[in-house]
Length: 99
Image (cartoon, rainbow, N blue to C red):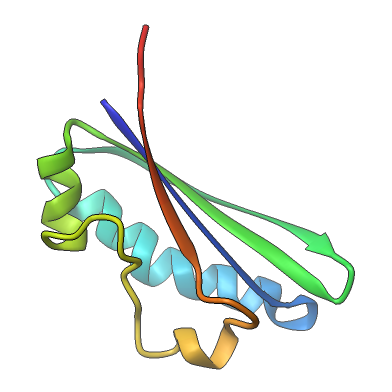
């Protein structure tokens, strides 16, 4: 099984609105993709920013590619992301689960 972790940041005052946006775009699309085992979004204040993280679990790297495309290490963007995201572009990491 694969864990996919996406991290980004937005202005603190936009956090709740952006979380709702991600729930309706990325999280909804994760959950609708065959091979997805669940997806969650977390956030926390960090000074004037909010750190955002999504965590999803997948049957395989091929299942992740069903969502992300052939290069699973690239973030998937939605139309309003540029409006919310600040600083560096989001990161995506994948981990093999054991046990």
